[in-house]
Image (cartoon, rainbow, N blue to C red; front, side):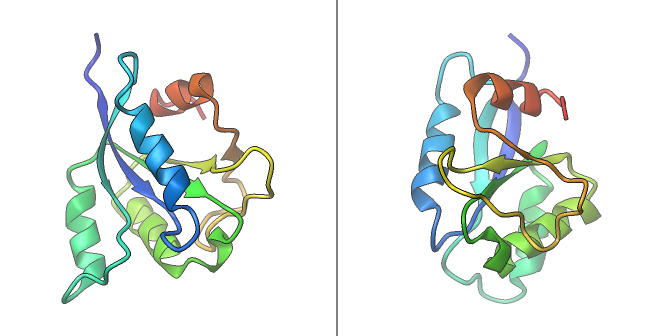
Length: 130
């Protein structure tokens, strides 16, 4: 089996913790193409938290931006996506909910698509299909 991609999950801690837990749980499935490495944190990191996120992103292969109903208001998610872009990390936006309108972080470009969260889609996205 191919080496699993190490993923950083960026999400709105105040609104989408449950969805993040489900996504991290999928990493444990036997046919998962990724492993859960790191994610957004609720507690403010001491010192320069953005620098700490930059260092955390050094250890991942892909950034999954989990988009919920309030992601456009989540400044931490916007900052994490900006850091991922600066570090030239592959990333994609994933809809946290199939039955709700999911919004993009403010740092997303207009061409960034929010992908439907299905197991097949997730495997393809982790593999680089966008």
